[in-house]
Amino acid sequence: MPDGIAVDYNGLIPNNVGLAADWRVRKALETWHPGYIDWWQQMGPQGFQDRLVYLRTAVGVGSEGWAKFGYVKMPEYRWGVLLAPAVEDRKIPFGAHKGEKAWQDVPGEYRAMLRRLLVIQGDTEPASVEQQRHLGSTAPSLYDMRNLFQVNVEEGRHLWAMVYLLQKYFGRDGREEAEELLRRRSGDQDSPRMLGAFNESTPDWLSFFMFTFFTDRDGKMQLAALAQSGFDPLSRTCRFMLTEEAHHMFVGETGVQRIVQRTCQAMRDAGIDDPTDVERVRALGVIDLPTLQRKANLHFSLTLDLFGNEISTNAANAFNAGLKGRYREDKLTDDHVLTNATYPVSRLRDGAIVQEDVAALSALNMRLRDDYVEDAQAGVTRWNRVIERAGIPFRLSLPHVAFNRRIGEFAAIHADAEGTMLTAEQWEARKETMLPSADDSRFVESLMQPVQQPGAYASWIAPPRIGIDNMPGDFEYVKIEA
Ligand code: BYC
Image 1 (cartoon, rainbow, N blue to C red):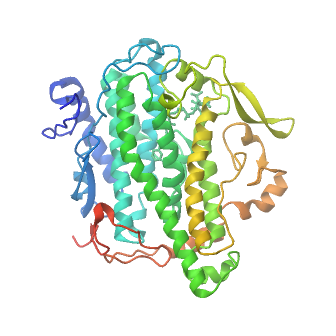
Image 2 (tube, rainbow, N blue to C red):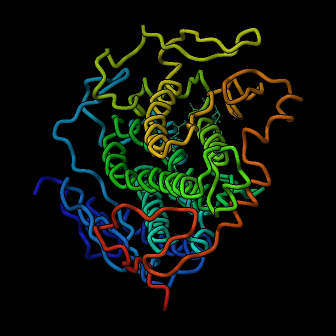
Image 3 (cartoon, rainbow, N blue to C red):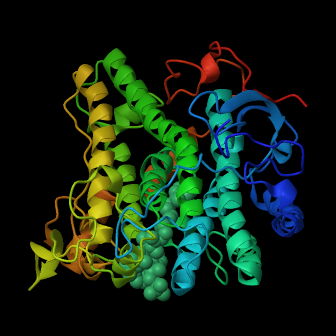
């Protein structure tokens, strides 16, 4: 078998990084493990911890058959350290060290920068589990409940992935960071998670699906950029994480799509053509399309903040250093050094939003954000096909990048979803038409009644087209009876 494909399941921590022979790192991870389990019990999914859940577990890292499905109690899930197979003779693909041999150890001069990237990435993983911890009890079906728990255990594994890198390559500092990752809490006043969107609440299932569609997609983009890293262990780690991440976005995209489908079907059955006739639509026990748009506006804008500032020296430094590349760097055909290149960025100039060419190295956050917007738009277009097929005159859309921002140039202004600037008074007056209102939240919350019979679905969401692991429609994805 090629190097690093076989996964060792004999020890406490499944891995393909040779932990059995790496006494120091194994001890550090085994010492960290009880704290992780405590965190999972306290901050992981509430309830259902002693129930059997039909989960996939990674058992290999090859392109075929990397996962197996089976009933597992969540605290007994085999969280492991898995890296994608090494690429023979890999070179640093970009930046000042382009073409040099990829690093197997941390280059001394970039230690602090790399540590910061690992900690920020690591911090988001447990944060999302914390944000979603109350959702199990209102799941619209056992299928959805299982998908939630699958996402949660894999975010847990992604924390392990970052903790392994910290402990293996950063010694005592890394061990301290690993402890801190278990100490911070989403939304906590004194010790919050590091990035804004990870301190917001995920109060209902619509928010969960929007989060997995929009925010997990930032995860995909950031991981894809880190997968290009010249620090080879990070590259291999992120490549394997991306394999798991695909399912998370599937959960988000199909979740929203099934809501859209159910709403359109109910409107057609009731003979309602006007999507803005919200009261009548809601009376059918489904979520009206304007509310879906407002939820999308919120999650999209919160997620854009995760790309950082428009002009970023941090991003330029990380690229130059060969630590964080661009999305699909290896598929791009420029010089991969970018010292003479420019990139167009939306900026605020004399009170107007304009496109301005800036040094490409400083604009890397924006480049990644633009790639993100394109990727998200493709999903929105697929949702719109469902609405179009139902013949309903409504289309979902992504709001302007200046809308509802807290980080970057546009944090200083108010703009509507089309990017037209508003005064503070205009913003206050129109906010509720663009972002979820208290009334929207109350209505969505009123729909969050648990459905726990195998094969049954809540009124507001259509069943999936196919089951997980091709299971039949009435499959018992979570065994609710202990
Ligand atoms: N909130 O130079 P700038 C995922 C700070 S999601 C708070 O523009 P940079 C997942 C920034 O730290 C992917 N602070 O920043 C999804 C900096 O502070 P310092 C997570 C913010 O570094 C769902 C200062 O402002 N991974 O995996 O270029 C479920 C100057 O800003 C924020 C990553 O993000 C913010 N939103 O860009 C589960 C990858 N934005 O250092 C998981 C790693 C900026 O000057 N992180 N600041 O004190 C990075 O690549 C970059 O750090 C960022 C920010 C893209 C986050």
